[in-house]
Amino acid sequence: MIRLPANMEVRVPAHLVSPLQVGIAWTEHRESVVFGLASHLATPGRTVLLVRELMPLPSEAYIAEPGHGAAWSGAATLPVLNEALARHCGIVVFHSHPRGGPVSLSNDDRDNGRRLLAAFQNIIPDRPHGSVVLGHDHSAGIFLLPGQDDYSAGGRVRLLGKGIRDLPSDNTRPVYTPEAAFDRQALLTGRDGEARIRSARIAVVGLSGGGSQVVQQLAHMGVGEIIGIDPAKAKPSHRARLIGITASDAKRASLKTDIMARLVRRINRAVRFTGIPHAIPEQPAIDALKEADIAVGCLDTYHARADLQDLCVRFLIPYVDVGLLIRPVEGGSGVTIGGNVITAIPGLFCLWCVGFLSEERLAAETGGRPRSYFEGADGQAQVVSMNGLLASKAVTEVLQLITGFAPVTEELAIKKYDGLGGTLAEWIVQPDRECAVCRHALGAGELIWTTA
Amino acid sequence: MSLETLAGEIEELRAAYGTASIAAGAPGQTLIRIAVARLPAGCTPPDTPALLVLQDGQRPQFYVKPGIRLPNGAGPRSTSLVPIAGEGWMQFSYSFPWDEGTHSLVQFVEASLRRFALAE
Image 1 (tube, rainbow over the protein chains, first blue to last red):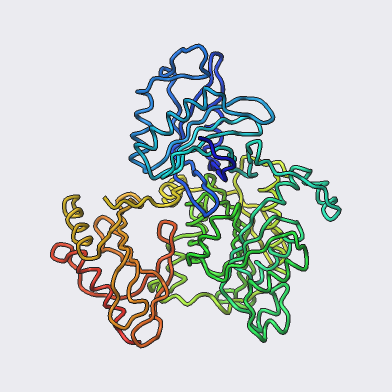
Image 2 (cartoon, each protein chain N blue to C red):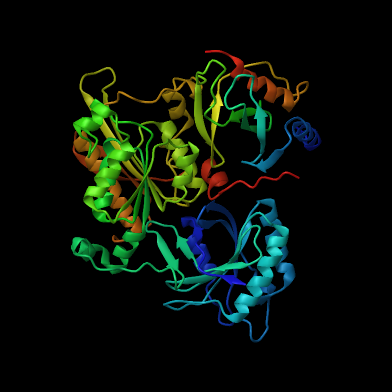
């Protein structure tokens, strides 16, 4: 039995996108199949399969069978099952129908998929499994979720990269309704770009000097939903940098999430704002983050960034980090003003890979004491105009991820801000390919607990 | 800790706390989740989920869920929240002697929980 519609997604980290596309390219004679090993994340309304590894079917495993796009020996599936079992992963069977427009599983695909998914579920019952066909710009698939006997269909495949590329199934493609408010923006982003902006969910973690400007600009941009995450309340010192704050908010110690909700409402009532007055990694904040397409972190400490990065790596969420640091020159006079905008796309690099996070930095932040004694970083200098410059760049990074408006290069880079020189420059980075965080946690998803 | 020793320890944990679920973490890491660990008398809530993280050659790490009040009504000091395998847990500072060769994981959990009997 097929249930429709299902809120399913298959998310592919950036480093596996090209191998997947090459692996499923047709040969002269037949379709090609690639198995994906996938963990998952589950929210109340959605299941996302997080691809961790690809295992192409060896060419000698295919069997010539007229009437089938691709047929292979059952024995060829055993290594995949063994690896999936060892890694506590589900299995996604990928193949392609290389054409533009909507694609669908053939009756043969569907029959084979049902048979395979049931067998996979029998052996690995705690992870979802899927069979997916990719076209040039659409996908289709059937899925079998843990504890269910009936199959789910639909959903989308998300290919991560410098621009997020979604391959929707026919029934999940975002639709653009022209609006006068966005007609100038649409000149850059196009109809499809506007449709994607309107359906995007962006988490903004930290709602002070940087975060409030990010929220304001996302609201003007017309994103579908902003998830604002910050447990703090307004205080008088916020009046110098928190966009949308009033004297009354500072006096009454309003929640920052409430101030942001009001700000968004005044800009565009069609933009949904979900306020989460908790800090990462409190569970309500983690649960909200899991719903996001992109996270923008506007956080003061390396520890907070490490927590957010850890979750984004685990759930394959692109993470745009914004930071501003104004401090006195060591042993001299004057100040240094530095900052960064780092877009960490799962599968390209994380903040650990590029050395922005390190055990030494975390230890220095706590003065070498255990983290449980760490009080945070209140009292650092902040200036609204500099927050704004970095926030604007971060929102532009979000726009690029959603719409891919700018051509991209192969080079990996972060943006460094020099507040005294007034420059925001691109720094080429060479990520550490042995990064332990990416090697072990990338796409790890939800843990599978066993009681036996 | 050998697999046989670990299996025995898990059985002891189940006997003491009813359920103990196991998951594989990073390489060499085993996570054990205890659904209901009884807190010292006077704490609210009276019990908490708890997490043990076992890493080869290292002292176990112990975490509980946030929101615990001590018997005197105060929140415990020197705590912080950390994400462990995608879930938020509270870590805290509390030292006591521990020897893997002579102490059991049940003893480790009980000693860790005694931290919440301290008035602050």
